[in-house]
Amino acid sequence: MIKYLILIIFSFKSVFALQIDCKFEEVYHDGSIQNGQVLINEKNIRYEYFDDTLYTIVKNPTGLFLVTNYKKKESERIYDPLIREIFTIYDDFPNLKSSYVNDNFEAKVYFSKNHIFISRVSVLSNRVNLSIYFNDCKTKEINEMFFRVDPLHDYIY
Image (cartoon, rainbow, N blue to C red; front, top):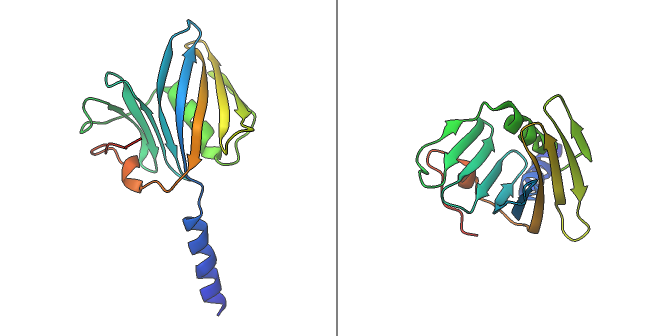
């Protein structure tokens, strides 16, 4: 009986795991703006720019990858220390801290009062200063195929 109860509890944990779909807006220090969509579940992140000339970043259990939006069948591993460190913030999801500081950057996390995810992340570094705003966040079931990179599957927003 105990064995079945434990199995049921673990099944519910995976069924009700927090999965989030948000739109984002990056605002850079010079005033330029980029928009896109972020998908997050307990072990994966997909950060996709809407602009076809830009790219999608996918973090999954096999690594951190960059896929150019117009070449979705080709991916490359990301070794850039700043990008890797920014994406490690999401390793704490859903228990994010309010700030992250290391040698390469400082990030502040602002929690939303209007939806279930954060409202903003500000990133300050020698290379880039920007704020990422998260809008229209909702919980929904997200198929694991959208976190694979060979090939990257189109996600309908």
